[in-house]
Amino acid sequence: MIAKIENVKINPNYKLVQRIFGYLNSLHSITNEEVGDLASEHVSAPRRTDTVGQAVKIMREHGFKQLPVLNGNHNSGSVSERGISRRILETKRPELLLRKRVAAVMDEALPTVSEGLPAEGIIPQLKQAQAALTTKE
Image 1 (cartoon, rainbow, N blue to C red):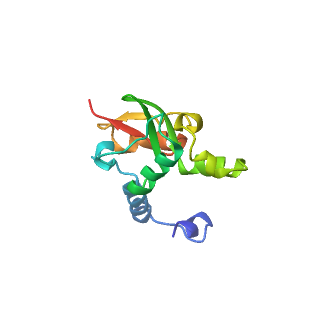
Image 2: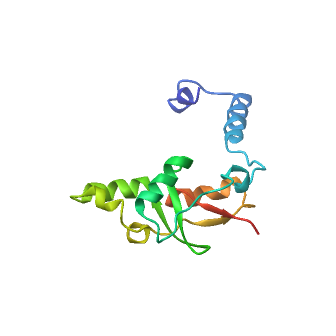
Image 3: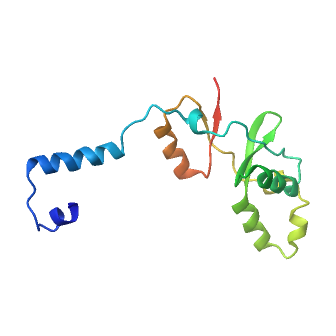
C-alpha cells in the first residue's frame, strides 16, 4: 500500500493514512523493558594474565562471541572471536597466538551501562561496540 501511495498510483483517504501511521508507530513503541531484563545473568571473563586459549575456551563453553577482560574487578579490555580470528590470519604460526596472554591481544573495553537503562537506550552503544556490560547500582 505504501509503495502504491509513493508511486502515486492511489490517493489514500485520511482513515487509511491514519491506520498506516498507527501501525508504523507501533513498531517503534517504547517498551517498559530495561537493559537488565535483556542481559545475560552471568558473564565469565578472562583475566589479563590468562592465555588466549583460555579465553577461547570460555567463549565456547558459554556461547559468547566477545568477553570483557578483567584486571581485578575492573573492566580493562575485551577479547572477541573476530579479533582472535583476525590475528590468526596475520600470523605465520597461529598456535603461538593461543599461548599469548590476553593482555597482548585485547581490544578496548566494552561500554558499561546501568541495568536500569531503558532497553532502547542501548541501541547507540551497540552501533559502536559488539556488546555492552551492565552494572547494578
